[in-house]
Image (cartoon, rainbow, N blue to C red; front, side, top):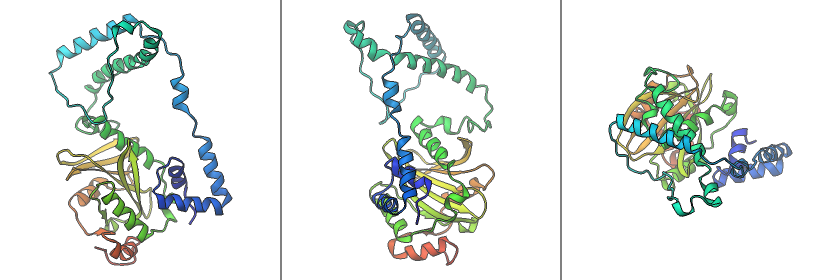
Length: 317
């Protein structure tokens, strides 16, 4: 089977598991056009981070620093005191010795602070705007939506939604499910990634299972289950571990995609699809309530589950 663009991009980014990586490399040896696509994708992988790191940035103007400090103090005085525990992904910044603050080295080290100051000022402006936005504003998902989550949480959901935008119906229309590969990948997700994942059977809602992928976001495991309706764009169920209290189903709009999220048993779920293609809220409640038997529950039942996923056999257990 010829790899699709999504697989080739994941291969270039180093995101494919070993078995899928071997499959792509075999296709590259057999098919010159596949090798050419990979070469083009690799050619576009330019060192942007290194290029921007070499930029000479001006020092933070003293007047701007004082103005931001006054603004921060004024804002803090009006807001209730909140204590937030440091997260595992929070950056650690060492204090700068005043004795060396005036040196050229220190100025280069502090140069990015100019950008940080601009970000802080923007954050205060955003805080004022956000209070004026109605709860139902689609671009924000409501005041009780994703803006209330930790930045890392919203980050992976936004990344997954952006990734899902690349999919079209044709992307997966010709993809055949490999039951043994899927069952093996499911076992790796459970064993290596520590995600107690099942693959919901959504055929009753007109969605056929097409693909299970092991992804990573900020070095954290992220599972993606992709379904295909008879018409319309694919729908993805993405799962990441979050050891926080359970959370009811909630609807959002992220990256111009409909997103329904909930949290259960230490796992955060995000059901993602194009606006208007499917009733994601209803699907999410069915999945959250474990309505129906899962597919690919074990290697022994994988072939039957595969047949059922393509609509040719009864639901698999």
